[in-house]
Length: 464
Image 1 (cartoon, one colour):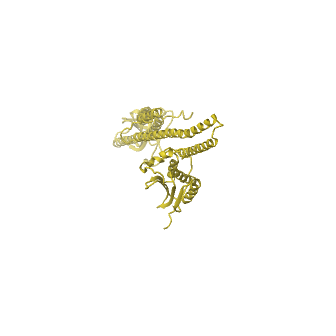
Image 2: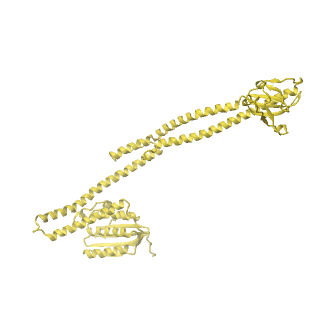
Image 3: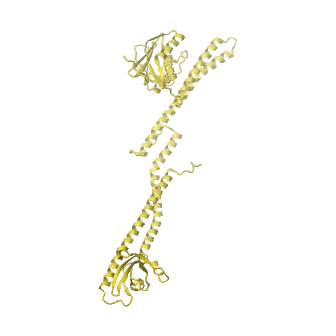
């Protein structure tokens, strides 16, 4: 259920990008607000300094004694208030705060440059203080004596500007996220459209015909490479499908033949059991039973190999010992002459059971063709172990011999049921020799046929 509720790639990518943009916009907004606030404070400080300088200059040049509160012009967002040093009387003030009492007092620092502003909070000032911010104080000389100049930003201009910026950001950022999300959704949809098209095409191909292919767009981008990869996979699937169909068809044919022989033999004997040649019937049953057992065993081995369930062991294997054992077996079950004079000590590292089966399959194949003699050879060629099995039979066309290593392929003379061939022996040889990093082939000879097996690795070349 959790997998069914999982968001699509398009939705997940859109969500990730929108979240990333939201984080970027948040950091950008915070940085922008701080930057604007700092810039406004710097501008206000410069403006306050200018107004204080103008006020000090005015009082420095004044010759008429101050007898009442002097009303000064309000410059921009800055207002000033001039008081005596004891903060009890207002000598001058900007027009915006001309009726206000003393609004602030200097700090306790003695040096003028270190004076700080402390707002005086009482019932008389509570109406004016909310409008003031960013205050500075400095000393001034007047006709009444020394005094203090307080300058403030009036009207909350800085806070107002910051609030306007925050509101603008809070309104614009969601809109930007919404627009970005929509554009990202559309962009990802366009980017994934070829992928969706390939998926639909593959679904149709898998359901109908494996011979069709996915169209490949021009270029070498990810979609084009994926299309080529999918087509390569379809090539392998088509090949495997044909191979499986041929394998099942050939296996059915090979299994049907001995079963048909068994059924026909037993049915004839059952019709007239008194006149049936039961020794012959038993011989047919035993022969065809062994043939069935051989076919089933070979099919089982190939099935395990195709599924990669057959593990390959790594042990020392002496090809010369295997060939001597096969020579003894051939002599015990036939009148064939076996020449082992060219068998030399040859050792490799591999799977003993597989290599034994490989040698036996090759020898059995040669026995079916041989007329009177087999010749075995084992030697090193560089760092490869070479095994050669020859017979003096009719021989084959070496140029066309590669097909004999395919499954269920036999030469015409091997079609005889007396030979017991299944068409799988050399196919198994091919699988085993490939597993051991080697090769198998027929080589040209003057008469008869010769199979050469080469296995790499593990062997130690004798010192000459």
